[in-house]
Image (cartoon, rainbow over all chains, first blue to last red; front, top):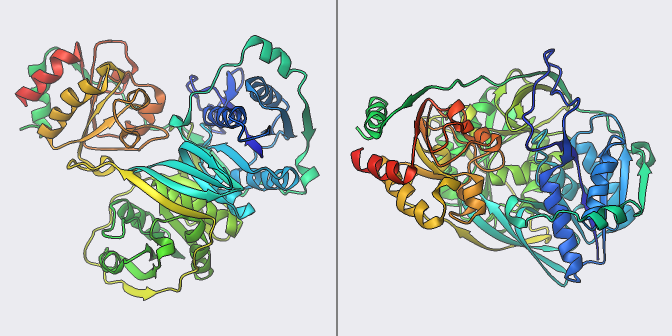
Amino acid sequence: MKILVPVKRVIDFNVKPRVKADGSGVDLANVKMSMNPFDEIAVEEAIRLKEKGAATEVVAVSIGPAKAQETLRTALAMGADRAILIQTDDEVEPLAVAKLLAKVAAEETPGLIILGKQAIDDDSNQTGQMLAALLGWGQGTFASKVEIDGDAVKVTREVDGGLETVSLKSPAILTTDLRLNEPRYASLPNIMKAKSKPLETKAPADYGVDIAPRLKTLSVSEPPKRSAGVKVASVDELVGKLKTLGVGA
Amino acid sequence: MKTLVWVEHDNKVVKDATLATVTAAAKLGEVHLLVAGKGVDGVAAEAAKIAGVGKVHVADDAAYANALAENVAPLVVELMGSHDAFVAPATSNGKNIAPRVAALLDVMQISDILSVESEDTFTRPIYAGNAIAKVQSSDAKKVITVRGTAFEKAAKDGGSGTVEAVASTGDKGLSSFVGAEISKSERPELTSAKVIVSGGRGLQNGENFHSLIEPLADKLGAAVGASRAAVDAGYVPNDYQVGQTGKIVAPEIYIAIGISGAIQHLAGMKDSKTIVAINKDEDAPIFQVADIGLVGDLFKIVPELTEKL
């Protein structure tokens, strides 16, 4: 079974995003970029399934600018076998990403596609579910545990009330939640090896997909600021403050 | 504009997340509801009483009992033939189902909206809430998920919706429900609690979490939350997590204990009315958003606080 893992290049999760003064977006110039953390978990899960013998090949795909090659090289260094970059400088919305990935899936015929549940830049949480819809496959979103049993994929999902387990028919879509695994760091020899792994570059037009956005961003602004309040010196003082708020009174 | 609102329920009662979603939908136009589940007569009757509701579409079938997106999405798509917007709460069900509906309708979803500016324009948080985008949709139909903390809850009574049965679109055979481990708690639900006591890595282990955080929460009638670090370390289950990818909360009072305040955590709680922070590190970022801060050893402070309140 082949596993397809879409990955996105996003702002590093440790960087505090700054809104541009003209309100046109978030300033990404000279900002550290990394693989979306949920996608790292997806790559890790795919590699573990291959190591367990449940998968034969792991293919990483990214849609983005030329620099997204770095993100794909990271996936290759972690253990993916080859990579596809669908190169564009345009912002591509989840719906268009899902359409492109559906085309890649038609060519690659994977048994599983594992995606991060959301990208930490647009926080949309849509692509996996949309891809599942377009392919007519089952979807195991927000996965914290995955077991492959023949043609069935058993997925434990993190839901509002706790955990839920569903069984999907392969081929299927999974989206990762935080507790699925802890992604490995690529070793230096593997980083070197990744440089010679195949990375194919394509364009959205190669797949005949219209990526024109459906949403127009009119403005981007800072959220209302909270300012630091007061520090109290003792529990008694804290209790007093809480009581004036009607707590524990 | 006719909207179709996803009613969040457990086949027994309507969940509160539905109410804020109704408020958001009402800003777009007429509010119709969809109750999909198994044995949901009671839920439908309850939903019909929500203020401002018109029709309540009820699809009662085993295929919908566990809200499997593969089965529910085709049902919604069918109903969207006569509606202009599908509006769901940004709950785990809403987040699972809505994008599947959107793709089937060839619509780009607008996730987690904070406000309705007009019929086609909305605001939504991006970058863990560090920026707010105002977006305009060019799609003829809209698919929207709603951040519950950003809208007032519609009243549970006063409505007189008409209940109408809709035919099942059946089990698509792509997925099946195996089981669930739902946390049982006598405490209020995190997303609707007035007071939340939340613990972080500073608690050091699960035992301390239970022996320090829970008695304080019980004394205050509060819900219990946690930072990602505390959940990852296994102190408490995943459904306690507050943050960018966990639950978004906005209680009257949020008490953060032993939580440093990573931006991902702040994203989930910074709209709380009053934030109280207890942390031994006076430079912890949590103090930059806290209204009341107390620097010190939580192992001494928390028991004393529980006793004195």
